[in-house]
Length: 194
Image (cartoon, rainbow, N blue to C red; front, side, top):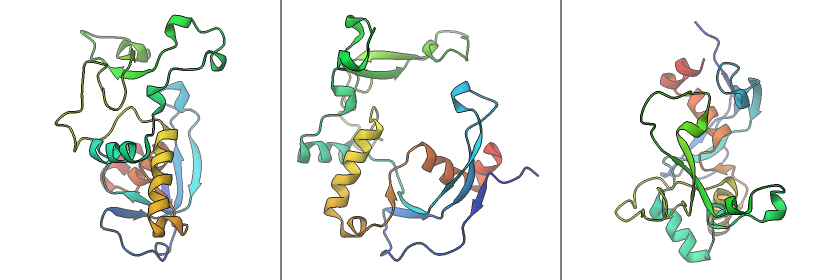
């Protein structure tokens, strides 16, 4: 039997009123990364995290749209890059956009992500497959093309409106490290990542 990638910290969740839309993930240590897959995943290493509250479901287009409408927020993918931040970049490559999955027509080298991902001009959360696509009729689908800074802005907005969050309860939307902690606690996923 493989060693569990997670050591669960004992103890109950912090004293915060139970939330129907969230679940508490206890803290602990887990193995993050991989020595067997993409080079940027290495080295596998132990990470210890405190427990945190996590949304039961990903943020939807509807929820993110409400945040944008209330604040006027503009996402990272909607802002053209500043040439000063990318010295040596070709000027015609500095445009607002995001990576979009494009299924390859045939077999490709799986070590080369550019075989199935394309940086597409004006792809953003409102236009998930590029400028001619929309999220019409996709209100309940998870929002995509949201950078870490965009998620933080949305969380801070929610924290300002929610006293439980504003009082310091650890809270998060699903992001890489937190996803790995939550996944390691799932009996189904635990066997896959062990």
